[in-house]
Length: 111
Length: 111
Image 1: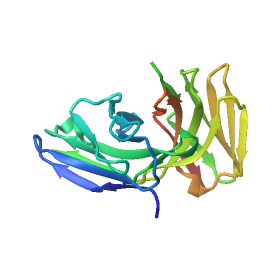
Image 2: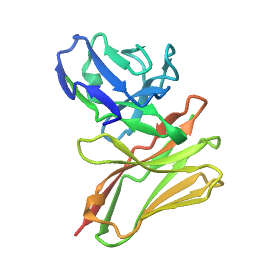
Image 3: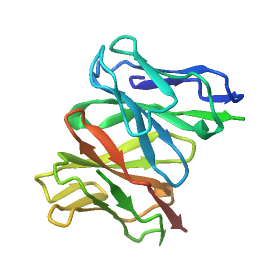
């Protein structure tokens, strides 16, 4: 099925470990986004990429890096995970009428 | 900066209408959106409204936009137990069409 695919779905990290969250879309969308969702706080934008080759900071970029590898893929990297990064991470791409299509999320726990 | 606010919780009886309200601050928003999130899932786009419209109807869903008061509402007619979920209001912001989300309204539909 067409859409946004995120991997992994679940991950537990120890404080200080690094990992990369993967995201790919097959809808030929230009813009892609990474959000985190914390209880009671809605979704907050971490980074976004308006087009292949460009990335920009969102509301909460500290502790994260991103790579827009090609038009399809937009990865999010945690270099040194902290407990405050325990969250659910959503990738999205922007399509018609500027609506987002979301992936199913990555539930990350940092202990 | 931009901000989107929603009430946290709404409880209705099955068959009644539900009205979920949202206020936003960015008067330059082009589109406003309603997303639905079921437990453990990503966000699903329900409907959207262009900022020069004041109403949009889509089957059981009616969106009302009061641009003067920066108020958006979602009415769900004949609410069903399957409508129980968290509903997020979002506004588009800026040239990269980043979406700013509210913190979500949890709708509980009682049998």
